[in-house]
Each structure stands twice: as structure tokens, then as C-alpha cells.
Length: 103
Image (tube, rainbow, N blue to C red):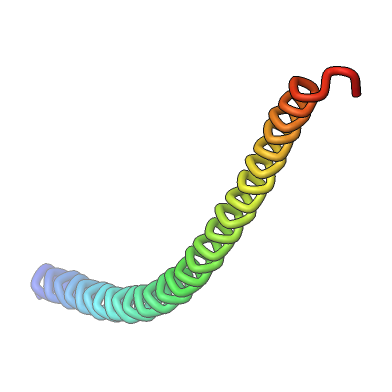
């Protein structure tokens, strides 16, 4: 009887430990899955916010690039007008000197 009682006790204790470990593992997996889901939701919300910020930054960059191109073209037009005026002045000045050399 003693051997049978010992085997039954060890088997029962092992069964209790296995059931306890199974339940703890199941609860831990559930917590991790729930935490993982909430983390993924938080990550997707954070990603959406970052994408929205990047879109607004891209719009601002595009507006800045357009203003830079506009200012560049204004400077180029101003420079070309100044060059043309200088050439025109030299041409007219040379023409007047040619017509009236004693001036």
C-alpha cells in the first residue's frame, strides 16, 4: 500500500504542477497578446501621426522650393535687365562717340 500511495501522491503533485504551469503560461500568453495588440495599435496611431507630419513638412518644403525658384528667377531677370542696360549704354555711347567724335 505504501508504494501505491507514494506513486499516487507523486502523480497527483506532478499533475497539479503541470496544470498550474499550463494556466500560468496561458495567462501570460494572453497578456502578451493583449499588450502586443495595444502596442501595435499605438504604433499604428503613432505612424499615422508621423505620416501626417511628414505630409505637412513636404507641403511646406514644396512651398519653400517654389518661393526659392521665384526669387531666383526674379534675381535672374534683374541681372539680365542690368546687363542689357549696360550693353545698351555702351552701344548708344559708342554710337554717339562715332557720330560726334569731338564731344
